[in-house]
Image 1 (cartoon, helix red, strand yellow):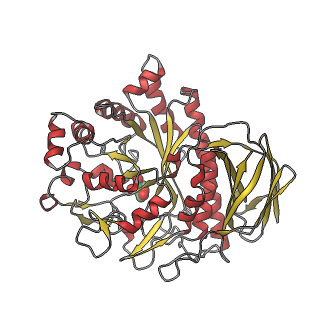
Image 2 (cartoon, rainbow, N blue to C red):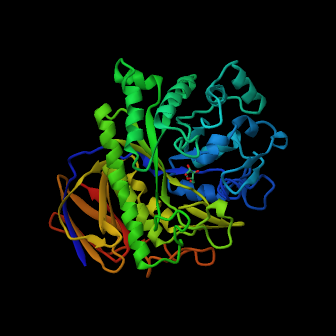
Image 3 (tube, rainbow, N blue to C red):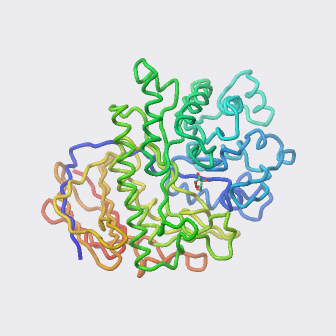
Length: 508
Ligand code: AHR
């Protein structure tokens, strides 16, 4: 049994937690786009213009703020022109990264923009630097966002869309240190500058250009990129309008250091559980590390940090295509998500967006489909329970004492993490107890505003291996929670072992 005591000043505003920290990522990979979203107009699965309704509704229910597409590694071999125009005339290609399957381009730009409209999500388009050209990327921006009589806006109209779309987020390549071209930071910094220059703001559409940043804790890459924009001269605001506005990094959580054996999603030992949490907790050091480097070159935090791929990555489910990255999702995955969000909230001044990988049927998915059936994963429920943090004001938790810590041969991690935010006369407290065996108590002295507990929910199960299937979709699901109470000015929460909980407060 462990305890954490802390103080929270509800009248002291921290950074705003951007709703885009709850962003998503959908790649042309395995059954994410095809079957996960796109079933085609003729499918027996209920759909709107070929996009399945059940998945859209599930994602709307968690207020999905943005969707990154078409990759991932796929983005750097995707040529957008092949995915517009009449579907039967679109050329095919081989998806060399993911399963070596033939991609028929039936899901392209118009289908993606329609999907975003159905979801009410803002599009985040990832452009091709690795095998594309500057002109190709510039044309794509024009096709999507320009009105009037420009060549690409005419082509878009010929393809059935009169008005331009709004595209707020634009990625300048993906993992350019690896699958996106195997470049050095210096090579990429030069290309990022060149490609970004020609991604124009047309007709009032202002692009937030996101440069492909480092792998995990490659702080040198971040430094090279930051230096490349800090030497341009002139006021910092103007410089950012000319080039890119943010840089991204990716961080995945595994149970082992062996890429060939990442561990099973559902059958794992206590030792693997601890190794998972040690690795998950590294996100804290990595976010802070990149932010520290950025602070040197940009103390006002005008350049955003984006974690546009994060989540767990296990061995694929037995019998499935190794290139499709299909994995189950247990309570362990949900706890990894709870921990990540606490770290993201605490770093919201610099961290402006995060995208879990990936939305449907791939890696740490929200939703798994099986033909016409669909199941919500434990991770989905964390997104749902935490939705109140979107665009809320963060309040730092000053920990005054805590004995909630695991230390073992795998390394160390805190077994309790928490975050607090407020918005519109309410506050939301999230609590994650990573202790696999023992319950825990959190006591937070909530100062500066009067408050009352209005609701509480908990996500747990008898074991951390518990997961949902189409046969048993409710094995891990949120339940009403009576473990939260007021004691004087303190909120006291008794958490079961391996659980995630949220407590809603009404503020006076
Ligand atoms: O999400 C799967 C892959 O992981 C992405 O395509 C790539 O960017 C990363 O390595």
